[in-house]
Image 1 (cartoon, helix red, strand yellow):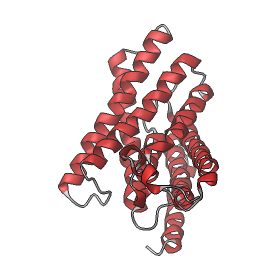
Image 2 (tube, one colour):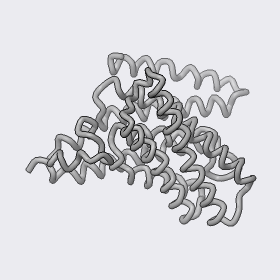
Image 3 (tube, helix red, strand yellow):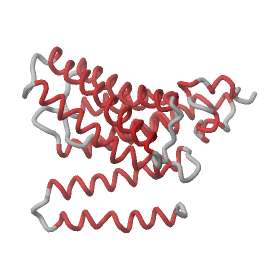
Image 4 (cartoon, one colour):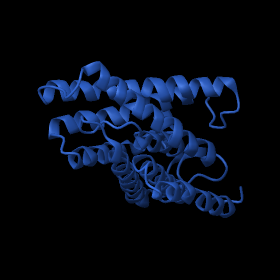
Length: 255
């Protein structure tokens, strides 16, 4: 029995044309295993992006100036559907435990990460947003909804979790909130914008998203090391490392 596409075309699942190839062409008996595979891959990518971002975290555990996972979540939800939300939840939960954050706070942070991407993507779909970002309307929608409102949700839930469940903060609440919001916004604008604008160039499926995400993680790691080691000669090598990778990727996808 073939998978009934009409069941999968609800707004929160995404349209048929955006349904991932690895799921869309399978039979119903294979749907759940493949969906679980997509969720696990997304969780690992989210976790990997977070580990890179933690290299520059602030005195408050879990708060960084460039939170790359926010960009991963936004692009994944836009192209593959909000149905993959467990991948973001699990990835953020693992990152919270990795950073030594208590269970209760980790759950709140994971919820905030899901809502940070899910609500803006739902609104962008409602407004008919397209990722080309070649019109003022599209740029404004991306900036206001994805890069501004989304991080506000995550930052607000995260700071409340740290404040009420951990018994205090290492700095004034507003300063940490602003730092959290700015870090997530930068991650969405840089990595999220990169994945959205580049992902539209070809058929979006699990393989292409995996290739894009791994490339972005490598480039993000290089930039992070270059910034953290700004006074060292090796920082220049990490900055130039991105050039051949981008060239090879452009050739690979005939861009």
